[in-house]
Length: 239
Image 1: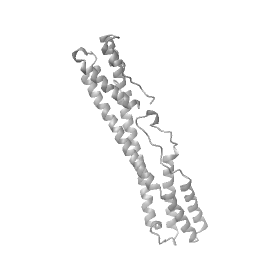
Image 2: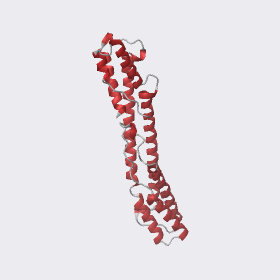
Image 3: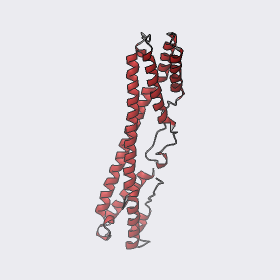
Image 4: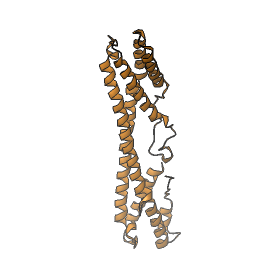
């Protein structure tokens, strides 16, 4: 939660400095109230962009999970149909390999990522999550091509028809692509937020620290003004 806490604390700090009126008069431009207010607006915007990107990423992963749910069962049915046809042993072996790879890949949804928790941004999920979905799509593609190469493969079941299998294959690749694009957008939003909060010259946390130091110097260590801003805490997470 450090990102949002930093933003909220900076908002309070800006409000306190504004309330001090003309008695708050730093010589450094980046510590002036109007500049702080502008920085607060930028920080809020970057935070909102992260939340929007996170929502888009969650939607893409949810849709992918739903889209991939039927793949395992369908791959087993396709293999069974090929076996029932007495397909060439070599071709059947290819189909079996594809089916096994599909069933062997992890297909569960990756753990949710909470943007408020910097330690959870990268998550503790294994790299195999996204890789598994890619693997499933690739081997389903191979299974479809195997079915196409069998001249006698012409099932009456609509869900096993070549046209349906090809449509699903296209859908699987599109779902993976959508997640990739959403993930890129989320990472870009996080980078922008981190730059505003922690990295850029006169970033939010450094500015807040400087403001607190100025208030202590200008009004005194035991002054009500300093005691008020001293309560505000700002932290820089490990990025």
